[in-house]
Image (cartoon, rainbow, N blue to C red; front, side, top):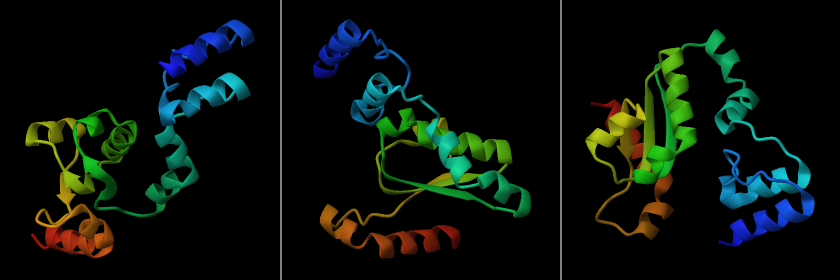
Length: 151
């Protein structure tokens, strides 16, 4: 409600109307503020990351068996995540399967297929607390990845 009110004031006083642009709500509305007050342009986050990391150059000079990405928690919200979709789309264009590593997996098999991932590796120890899992994340990731690739 507060952002709607702000956008109305900006529209009236600054004659800038960008609240409905796709991406305006990104980063809690920060994208809207950057566009409305500083004239920033919206760009694709995944395209930006791929460009600055020079992935295209790596694809030309090296071979990859997998692309591995990560997320703290895979749930219904992840299905709408643009970054994970961008990573899986990139993997498809390159013919490289994408595997995701996550702290907690809260999606069923049908929804996993929607994302386009080869597999998801959950690293948490379900019988332990969130605090334990976060404090031991590096070891848990290593253990889960080793187990996954040992199959």
